[in-house]
Image (cartoon, rainbow, N blue to C red; front, top):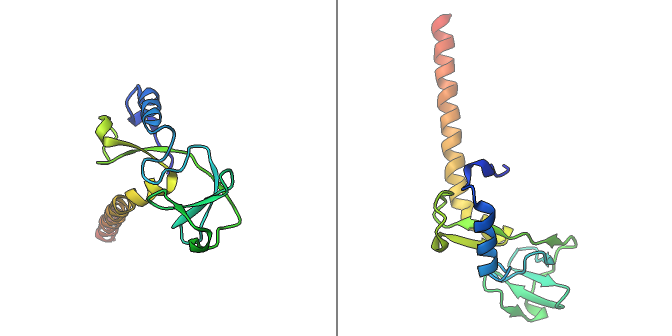
Length: 140
């Protein structure tokens, strides 16, 4: 689902720029650079950066020897750093709550939060469907 920036602070672009500057345009979890074109390993435990001719591991960002790395996917990905809210509150823009993370690190961090929200949504839809069925059955 696309991000609705109308829900963010009016100065979000400036806040984002400051966090990217703080991180020196690198993921603050794994160290991959913003805009880098990389190849991720099949199990997403490492990546290959052709500009450095080197493999790096998630989440440490430490270089890995070639023999350690699983085969990389044929299709590369361009890294776009995102700004993560550690407490998932998009109104809480304290520096200590904001992190510059690559797509993969951000998705991994948010996975449990997204799963909980999806479960709530499914439950709400099921409940709404039950109410609709009860109303329909009452009319017949």
